Amino acid sequence: LPVIRALLVGKGYQLAVSAAEERQLVLDVLPAFQEGYDILAQRQAGRLVQPKLTLEDIPLPAVWEPTASTNAATSRNSGLSWQELLDHWRQDCPRKPRTDRELQRLIQSLSSFLPKATPATLTRAQVTDWLRHERDQRGNSAKTLEKKGTLVGAIFSIAVKDELLEKNPFAGFDYNRFAAKEGLAPESQRRSFTQAELAQIFSPQGLFGITTSAGGGGYHARIWIPLIALYSGARLNEIGQLTIDHIVLEPVPHFKILQAKNQNSIRDVPLHPKLIDLGFLDYVEAIRSAGYRSLWPFLRSRSQVSTDSEVLGRWFGRFLHHTLNLPPEVTFHSFRHTFKDLCRNALIPRDLHHALTGHASPGQVENVGDSYGDGYSIAVKARELAKVDPGVTIPKPIPFSGVRKPAAAAAGFSSSPKNKTSGAA
Image (cartoon, rainbow, N blue to C red; front, side, top):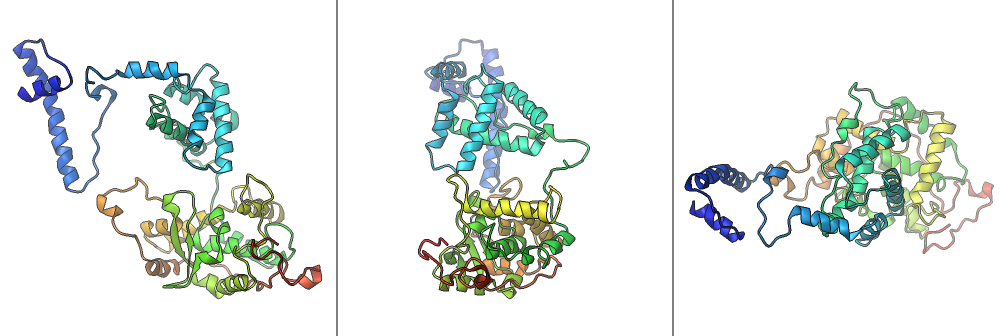
């Protein structure tokens, strides 16, 4: 009884109830104390435990604090517009042009579909209606809807943290409700390459049969970037950013990914023995000797909003679907899917191949101890990576000669690169 009285006085309340009613209040509050001590004991034992709060469990506010309804009214009266919400998100850090453009499109779609809604008044039911509209009008899968909702929800989350909005209607949204229950994958879903498709891609009639300098950053970018993706599972943009400074020989040959999709993707990735056998380290040394810094000196985008690697991505898509006549379900990203399958088939532990590809473990950290230390050593990664075998024969790429095309003389190219300092052709 004294504890409950002190808690209420501390929040500015005094009870005017009977003794029986006060005793009942104590009995009602007691389970929360018990749960709190149980959670405290589990945390002290090293487990991550959170209280299971519902809207009905929100603590009684102090008499001097605004109520939730007051906050909501203030938020609605603030008149935060969709454009102001987007601009506030942009202020934290430089945003990738592609992400910015996609968010602008999504905000435009959301505000057009719900013309009377504002960021402050948007409800969970309206979010559901909009996502259903995107599904029905655009044929979006559950996975695509989750990407859209997560992206828009991110800018709401920042506004809530800065107390510009009362709530984030996208928080905790269940996107599985949109998933097909029959277990049938959409026809357009990305998939891994088959072994036959890999053999076709890396054959003399495939990538190795195209020696022209035009398209995709030239011969060596078109050959080595897909090979690195196959034997590492790295993303296209991660490989496209590599420079000679990112290639390290000790304690084992590996490359560093220092700018990636998220923090989990910052990592060191060993060079697969097959890449070394094919002459990748010789290629790196030839790039260095030619005075270039980028590993792909002729891979350059003329656009202000797309990355250099997107040049190869578009070229590779045309190569797969128009030259090789492969189905639309395979793209450059299929190399990443293929690598994950190869890791599983080689019985590489899940946490280790997540470390190789920069994937977060499902469910994040299950125990506090999982977050301790620096993770797997590069030597252990290299040992396990060597088990990956696509099972296809790959020709050895033509050595780099310092010009765009291997057969430079026949094409009339100069034998010395221009503007070596900047890495431009």
